[in-house]
Length: 375
Ligand code: GDP
Ligand code: MG
Image 1 (cartoon, helix red, strand yellow):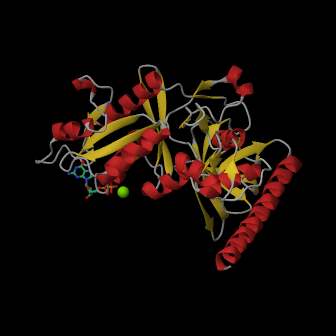
Image 2: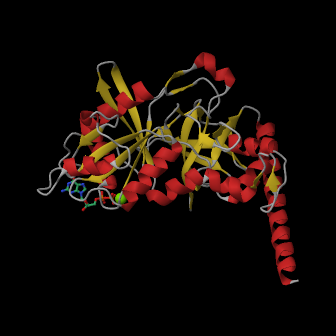
Image 3: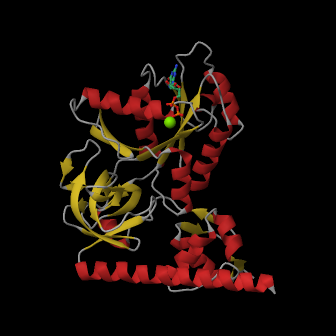
């Protein structure tokens, strides 16, 4: 009959039940964990959380258009791909991120202080001029999982790092599953090829068990042998990421509108107050903009790029540090800029009120559950 319990829907979408309750809450529908949803309501939740409803029973993730509005269609421009690096512990994720970043910094903007903001952007010159790539440096799988669980979709391409001397390991498989579930294309970086016991062919062989077949074996997956340590083939990897972006994805955004995006990480700085790294996914974020993140309100007081330079604005696919929020948001929270300050405050206040109400409701539900258990 198309009805589904909150718990079953959560399980099917791999999100916590609280996300579902919250999503409905934002749509002024109050449910508790024990309730059954009818089909239109279940579909509403699925769409809210960025899923595409395909048939009565199955839901799959959409492509990366969820940050676009109908009005943007006329003004779309290409945007850089946003890349996440995943893989088993010690296979070289951090080394590869650092190698790519330092190679670029050394070539171009020497003297630029690279500060850690959880993401960085590099520029490479190709045949058609300068191209940019954005790398997310989410601290391990937990942050990525948390963001995904919260419905955040920020990654366009996943680089799967597999050490050539170690092969496919449990977290490699986990990363493959994450990327597949999110519908994100995988580019494999077979790392540590400088090691004497490196065996790239064995890695390729092992990956075929997970339907990742290298192009040279008639498959569709780009696999690049690299060494983060000796900085081998890094350019080849970057070129291939751009090729995947160009031929498999259609990455566009409207830079001429108010910004929208996702918080990558955030913390409370003793002297500067709440500091958030935001990834702009549509529009351009400007100094002085009024933004709402979840139930938090803010006015952009300062913006810093990934080198720690003050900037005035951040176009699509740019990671930027934002000062001026009234509270610390969570990784995975979406933000949106409003032209009307009163409207922004009203939306933030309204959400805060609803959150308080839903917490009270949850507490009440927990209490009544305890009572009925006790009886
Ligand atoms: P992560 O846990 O995936 O972030 O892995 P790390 O980047 O911390 O690297 C784990 C270890 O492998 C460190 O000792 C690195 O120096 C080493 N390593 C990373 N990449 C390479 C490489 O290309 N060649 C060699 N020989 N060692 C590497
Ligand atoms: Mg690491």
